[in-house]
Length: 145
Image 1: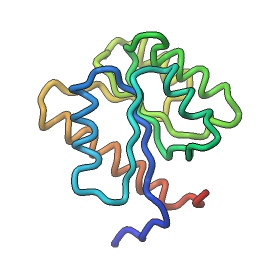
Image 2 (image 1 turned 45 degrees about the horizontal axis):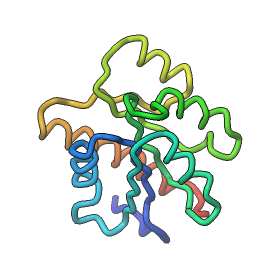
Image 3 (image 1 turned 180 degrees about the vertical axis):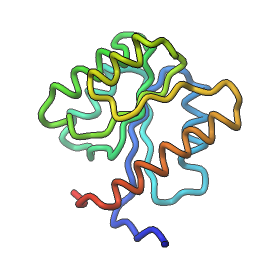
Image 4 (image 1 turned 90 degrees about the vertical axis):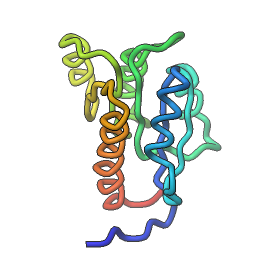
């Protein structure tokens, strides 16, 4: 079945401080896709400023690293899920940490998914594209704002 045409781009907020990883995620998500919009910020503080700016549209998905300066991903996730205005936005943790305590804490704080960044480039791009496919198809069934 063909995907229905979207009235607006599928919006992704990438919260990632590593420029190389951010570039790979952007390449995996945006390359050749006209129906996506991606904004990248380097940490949780910048992400919250972006999300709370009334002139910026809300993202359909937040892809969040855990290990960042100023405000890490775990702190940001807690703030997001405690905020009535922002808690419904799906948040996928995409991080290098495979520690059980990080995974458990993320799900306890209502992360939508937890993905450990693969070391292999092709596996990394495939993982990001799988996240995109799942959440983009989900968003197509939600009302446009």
